Amino acid sequence: MDFATARDCRVLLDVKVPMRDGVRLSTSIYLPPTADPHPVVLVRTAYNRVGMQPGPFVKCGLALVVQDCRGRYDSAGECYPFTSEAEDGYDTLEWIG
Image 1 (cartoon, rainbow, N blue to C red):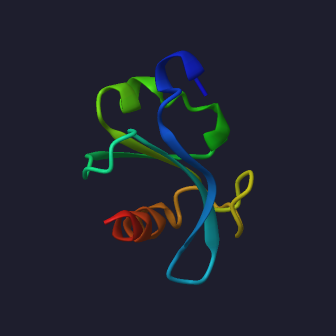
Image 2 (cartoon, helix red, strand yellow):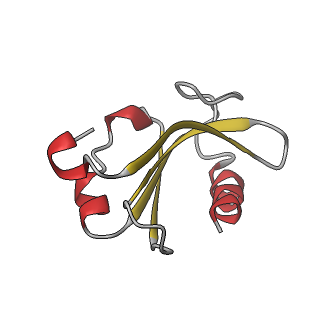
């Protein structure tokens, strides 16, 4: 985390978001300090959600949601690239919304 630019953000580091088949995907959420509704940027990655820098997003008033893809890092399930991305992305957007 870039503490110099995002020290005031609200952070939820390991939220398990349920998919339609019951698999739970590890997700980090970075929110601006105010309780107002914020636009959301969703990043789904096979390369470890922990490395994302939320500062630029939060500083601009955006909420950042970063998720490890199915079967990667702390997310459950099996990793078969490009086979469940559409469904998992949709389920995550529904969960956010």
